[in-house]
Image (cartoon, rainbow, N blue to C red; front, top):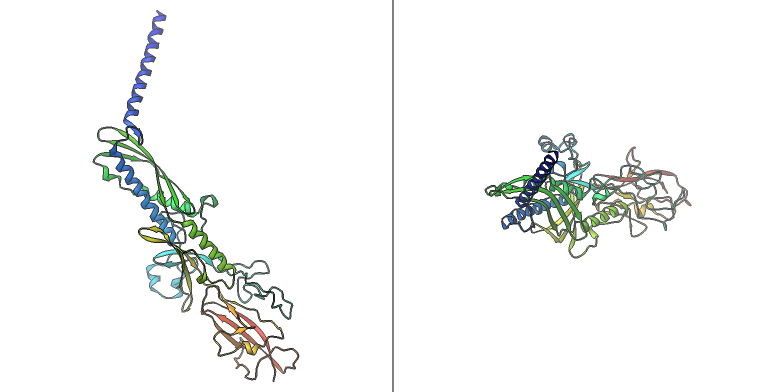
Length: 427
């Protein structure tokens, strides 16, 4: 009797296992991954539609990043915190108080209705006792001379390498840091993919979509986008399918533009006589300077953008551009020392537009290529006086009856550098 009961139990277990296997086979037959023999032609439009949506969102992300110095803000679906912007009332006002309610002019400027953060900023801090962020010691006290005694400098030893600002550009790759251009594009795609309207297929299919996860890799000549987005699809006849892996490729050469922009920013903040307008590029890439987009008060000069465009990279039928912003910085005045060979009257000429010192060398350099006004103020802070017509010299072998202080000033109408020079008058 016990043996018969045991046999019945074994048969029941075998029967249950057979039922489970049959159920699994039926379920597997109904829910097939795309690409199997059950992948019907009617699913191909769905995958094509989702891929097109992925390509569209990738293009939008790239366009936003290019127009905004590589960043996409959180309000747009990206990862970078939004800046404080001026309200409608403050934009209508021209007062300095209204200007201060936003971060414009401090962290970004507006170009083509986009918030472009500064990639090139004014120097903020001194570096030891060598480099200085503020005039008149900026960029260093005896710029550009590197060998100076208390009385005079060796004019044969000078350097154009200087501390003229800081570079503030987003990282390119996720492997370099969290807030990278790649990560911003991924976040935008992940935020926008659920907006793809799968309801266009509702007459034939029902959908249950999971959370999209994007991976973006910026290579030298293209950008690859992979998307894992689990989507269960059920047809009206009861068949079930699963979609998950999608991919797209953009032929935008973002890495080339990014590397060129970074090299320009480094040169612009580190070389006094660098001129962005003379940058040499390949035939397909152009560099354009758009000047004075944000000005402080009534200043003639202001903050600029540098637009790098690659005609071989196209989105929406237009060449792709990367835009970076540049904050206006002070000019750098050449140090005037007590070298007896320097004739100050020959250098300080009231009616000369661009006075020179020691031949062809300019008296001052402007890191933003602004036109400079050079002025010479006698006894600054005291009563103004005219420049002596008989001449001003710094030749120590003469006997002088008096001396004056002349402030030599280089001004771009917004920021200035200066030096107070003791000038001895030979009467």
